[in-house]
Amino acid sequence: MTYQECVDYVLSVPLFASKLGTDNLNRILDKMGHPEQAYPVIHVAGTNGKGSTCLFLASILEQSGKRVGIFTSPHLVTINERIRIGQQIITDEEFVKTFHTTMQYVEEAKKDGIAHPSFFELLFLMAAVYFREQGVDYAIFETGMGGRLDATNVVKPVLCIITSVGMDHMQYLGNSIAEIAAEKAGIIKEGIPVVFFDRKDDATGVIKAYSEKRGAKLYLVEKSQYKLSEISKKIVDFSFDSGYYRYCNLKIQKTGLYQVENAILAVKAFEVLWDSLNFGSKDRFQLKTESTYGLMETGFGIDWIRAGLYNMVWHGRMEQIAENVYIDGAHNEEAIDAFCHTLEVLFPNEQKNLLFAVSSDKDYERMIEKLCTISFNEIMIVRYEGDRAADLETVAAIFRRFSGSKITTFDNIRAGFLYGKSHVDQCLFCVGSLYLAGDLLSLGV
Image 1 (cartoon, rainbow, N blue to C red):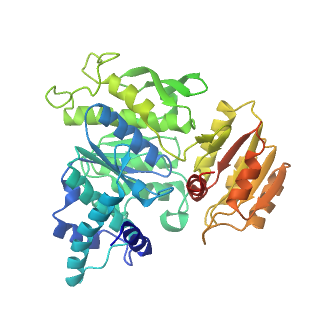
Image 2: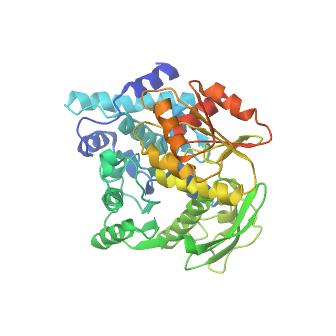
Image 3: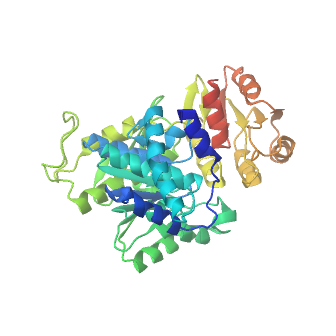
């Protein structure tokens, strides 16, 4: 099969298995020799910020000399983006090879009456196999949705990370923060440390209770622990007091302010890994580059952290794709809150326009109400390709209820984008859906 035939096959597989749970997947993994156990695993769940946290942590580990596999979702342009080692996504040739290797086991399993894996399960199996073949030192697996019943929950991690808990995928996970938190907490394993971003809401008690029940040491990170030092045209400089160390002059490339929260979560996770896995032994840890700042007195690699944070790039997350043009994949209420906060702090005086698209299964009325707290000169509503896209006029009517801005609708994303981009003296923010972000990147507009 060609690369495109392999991709088409994967995309044709149903999104969810007919029976939720991991029993079927474990039976296939038995036949494969459990590739997901061939390396230490970090398991990441949460509503928003999972992918960014994965990439920040992987980037820090890379600076320490480690080879890190990363499995994330969804993809924006090509399916290959879901499987990568460091910043390098799996090549088309490697994708084909890994697909065929994985499918040999799937076909063998089918002969024994084991069901074909779902779309997400198949990609997870491919990632697990690829990371084993590539000999990674660590693998970071991001949950697809929830945690308790997620395909990735077959892993036996050395560390669990829960980024945040917000209202999303309610039809599957529950109708309250506490119910959704319980699903996320399903990744917590007996005696395995957990790092959690504490937003002081109903999720906190749930995560604490699950951690205590499983004897898992819980490390909390919260907003009060970081302080913004400088915001320039290209970088955000901040400090972070982890409770053990105080880090100054940490920098990330200018992006959404929410990325600072994901960055400090990754730093705390690296601290926990260091302590729990004896990272400090000199024979196992070598600096990737010549030291600039030196090591902390404990031998802790501050250079790795600084370089890892600064070098991380995650497309479609408040990404500047042209002069005055930004795209952000915020697609639920919590993410829109973070997006609006970014605009208020980083773009307080700029003239702003909005390009918006959203999925029909989201609580887009609440998203729109929050967006309308920002003063936009003009709002352009577009519909992305696909059955999940919300109706244009329904979305426009909600915007008109909450905003007095000029509102224009476009059936075509390119037309809406080019119209918005023509306001050359004003910032254009494209937000509402990862599908919109992916379409804009693939169009090359």
